[in-house]
Length: 492
Image 1 (tube, rainbow, N blue to C red):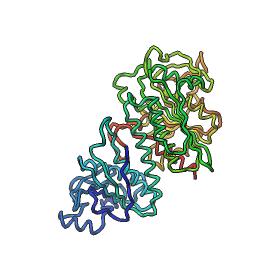
Image 2: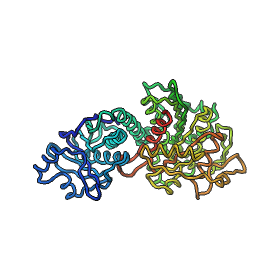
Image 3: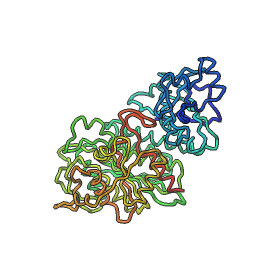
Image 4: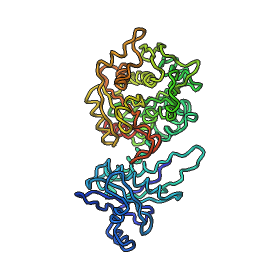
């Protein structure tokens, strides 16, 4: 999706239609945020009361996530809840997104110019408002449809010019999130390993990045037994994509590994029919790392970043891999497959092994890996497992800065016991209790000892059944903002 232009303006864009303002809680009293005295006076003169008074009468509130639409002097006015008057970047991001989304809904079929005035002053808060406003415009364009029903032709955001650089960064990040969303939302008959690799190459065109795509012949020659096994049941062969951003004066090397199962039927361990409906999202990790490295290159960060995306379609057929098969992985380790629906870790294991050979300073993988993590943490919080607490803290800080909920989980040593096999070096999975932790323990076997490593399980937040805050319905682009924030931190 092409996002609308966003311009910083010095004061309330009073002629915008619609206009997004805020309601904040000041010691228990809702107060209007972002409106000038002249605007409030003109509104009260026309409608008999100030905008905040009308908002409360119509069910508006300062509570985050609450919006209400009012008639205005020159166009509709949307009031969005900011929470406490001391607004954090995360609440500003959420409020701006909710306000803009509601503004577009109220516009119907019209293409509109949206004004946003929420009294944002500090650069990081203004940037959050910009990011939220842009993400709030996202609509997946249906196949064969030229554009969504309601669009914003432009967004004017009230804020100081000193925030211009921060807003520019926010735009690049928002574009990366929306790129990942578009990939995830694309039907699996249109986005499969070959076309995904081609789309990634196209998205990176014009940037100073190196793109390498391994096809099925190169994968066989390189010994990528996990990727080949997972993709072996499909008529569409697998791919492994490596994208490298390596600027002069790079201050370190960050490697990002993403699971890219473009459709997961469960293979011979076939999923129930209803469980397959959203399985085009099983490539969300690959979408996240490819979109993130694009943003890093656009921002020109002085950090070497390499993204590895293992792309395969897990299908049942006469050539599908079986439970009890023993696979020889890229690292040389052998794995006894115990469940063909635990396929993502096999793809990741090969990619982790390949990434490790480049000796990065930090290795991060991201995947829609286990339903167990979703059961444990819900649909909005991702799980984090790491080689050590210092690495975990680095990821937690990045996630907090990005406004993406992330929760650290352990990798208990007893989980390794579940992976012992009588016929191979490892089993691919263990018992259901603690399945997310066992999956992380399996992945750790493919990371060299002493290498800082983190695993992000985004099985819950990668897909949303309905839009909320800055998160769109369908593919959410989960993890992109955290990975970009991580890269920005490491590049300083």
